[in-house]
Amino acid sequence: MRLLSAIWSDIRFQIKQGFYLVYLIITIMYLIILSMLPPNVLTIALPLVVFSDPSVLGLFFIGGIILLEKSQGVMMAIVVTPLKTEEYVLSKAISLAFVSVMAAIAITALSPIINVNWILLIISTILTAGLFTLSGIMINAGCNNVNQYMVKTIPYMLLFVLPCFSLLGFEYSYLFTVVPSVAALRLLLGAYHGIIWYEALGLTLYLMLMNYLFFRNSVRIFENKIVYQDQKI
Image (cartoon, rainbow, N blue to C red):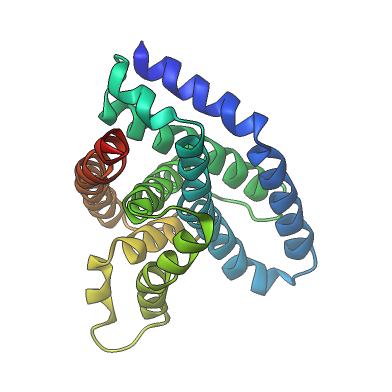
């Protein structure tokens, strides 16, 4: 019950702060750009756009949300309320994943692409959003303003994005699937272009494991460097 209340509170907070409006504008821009692409380019561009959607949302928006809540004293409230740190972090991941899924469905449904595996699309979008949102929470630790967060985010974004070029194909490129972002993109591509069931299952289980590990680590870092650090201050 606390978790559901926290998720609903996060959604209302994000709407109030204009995150949904910004994301609606971004989604519309994506749709306009995609509508101008020829079909052969669209089949590649659409999965990449959908992949970048939760990446940007999770990694960049979460930083602004946490910094804004820090300035409003929300972190101090976590210490004295029944809401656990695990519930706070999970609420952030779920609420942002919800937006990512809605955007992915809208962008895909309004495109001429057919034969999409919708279940796999939703699963891959949720797992991708989780990875980047939890990464954003870990990166946010120790940042006092947006500029610090943006600078600190750049090397991590490169670390996530550059290995994805391994999907272009070269000798031993498949080994890069161990990088969570590569596994997530490979699974998402499977939703549009087809994928062997056991490969999809393996990627899904691997990404679920990575999400769990990221979650446990983000909770630990969040408590040590944000919640209780702010309490000391």
